Length: 134
Image (tube, rainbow, N blue to C red; front, side, top):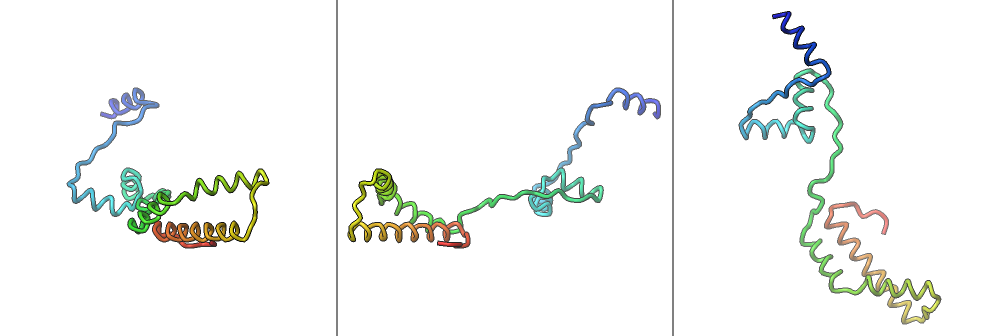
């Protein structure tokens, strides 16, 4: 048998060994995935079997929306408003120097700023983020 093993090593040199499969029940796999905590199962099993270090896993938030109703309200408010169009027109007028700055215009700009801040706050809350600077 030793001779066969040596021959196999010469033949398989540079090739990967055949994959190893393991059948698990749904419950067993669920327990294994819970224990792996986001680490790929193969890496987790190898680390446990051979007492190695678990690889670091970069995690993304799988459910970034905390409050779907709040997010819906924000999207509805954005859909009802013409903020993007108005902001574009204002930016164009500022860039061309044709924006008349009257108290009425200033009040409208301040109102738009307050609306944008409210929308931002609602989005931050809906996404479960910290508020940060306004």
